[in-house]
Amino acid sequence: MPAPAKKTSPKNEPLAAASNRSERLDARVLETLVGYNARRAWLIISGVFSERMAPYGLKQIDFSVLSLLAHNPGATSRQLCTTLDILPPNLVSLVATLDSRGLIERRPHPHDGRAVGLHLTADGEALVREAEQTVVQLESDASANLTVRERETLIKLLQKIYL
Image (cartoon, rainbow, N blue to C red; front, top):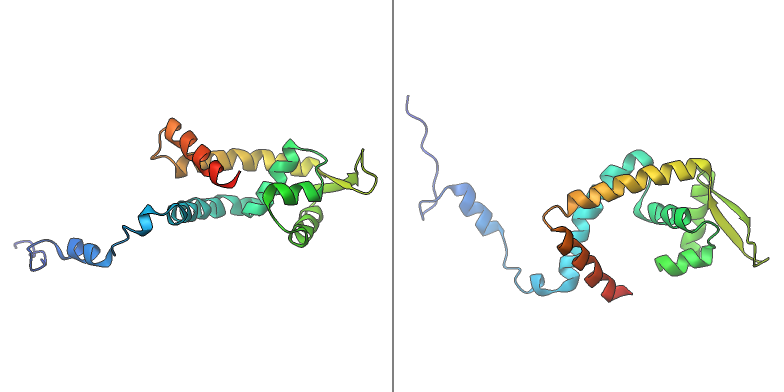
């Protein structure tokens, strides 16, 4: 029995190829915009991040706070807000959640009697150590189409926008 004939478009190409081309819109103007491209890249990386951080119960902001505290023990809420460009009320509930999970603890600041330093607990240190390794790997996977040099250049260029 002969194989069924593939359905073709009027231009004699497979319908799937014609359909994909007709579904793709002209995005040439958008593709010249930094914001559009940054957002598209962020959507890919963010999706992979969410998937791989789910076992740790971490969102991007949780991971960022824990990583900062791992490398800056005793940082204050104010310092975290400044570094991450977030509002203090948003950090309050985040710190409370991380504290209730037993990942961080508050201690008096050694130089400022009015401030409280935030520190990782032993559980927090173990979690962030493992999570950082996972994030490094997921970033490598997500940017696999870039050379090491291209990736470094991309990071430097993006930092020029926000630093």
